[in-house]
Length: 86
Image 1 (cartoon, rainbow, N blue to C red):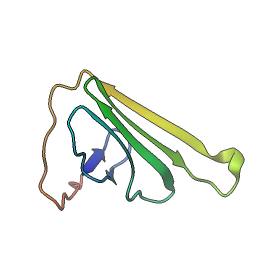
Image 2: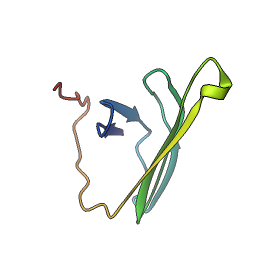
Image 3: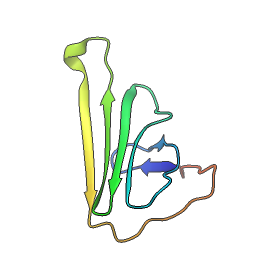
């Protein structure tokens, strides 16, 4: 499963496809550098992406969590999905 984030940066997150629709918690299979430690949590009310922006200096690492609620539409893409260039 691929989740595309192009609100700020144009990159995608890869996950093992969920086996059920109601709840999913998974680790990201791949992330673009310098991102790591990614997770996806989905339930019937929201979708949360969380990851770390890695730095050589631990004091400069940033943990990011994005929660999407009131999701009206999910779109299924065929693999491989190519992020459009702007």
